[in-house]
Length: 193
Image (cartoon, rainbow, N blue to C red; front, side):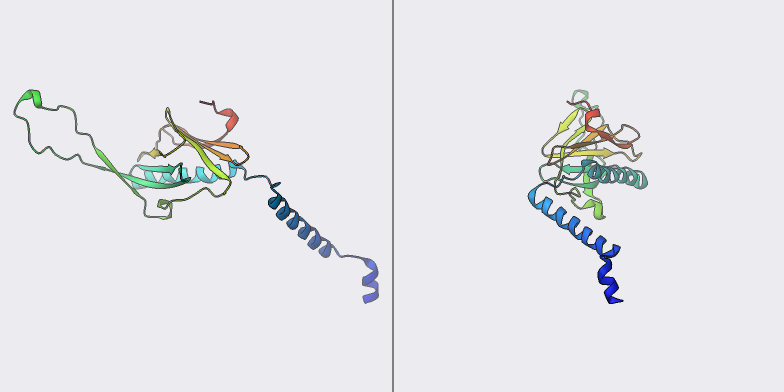
């Protein structure tokens, strides 16, 4: 029987093993030479979109404003809870009408990272991806800190988060006002500012 096997050639299993080894070595070689394509920014955008939806849902569940905050210089982000504190009472009341301040007191806010893993600083899931810009309302941030706040109702201001890979491919996440729906749009569909 051993003589018959030698004359028949390779089995399908042996061919599959050889083909998979060649494919794996080709991928490693292509990555080393720089021929491998970068990460699709839409994949990272979908993962980040899930994080933003979680922030909105957590704001609703805890009945407290939360924000997704990003450090664009360090390329890291986390979720924080915003607690509104009562304004401090004035120490002395004025005795004359001219000196009375009739404006309502301005509340102060304090934010703290949420006490779960999402409260820790995170980076995007791919090393060749970056958060290029964050637009909140009419403001655009490319450096420093930026934040998207979600009210206790889950609503948010309109915002866009632009992701880019090393090849310059872009993906844009839009957060729709009031509903806080997070959707992925093609970069070409977004008006450049």
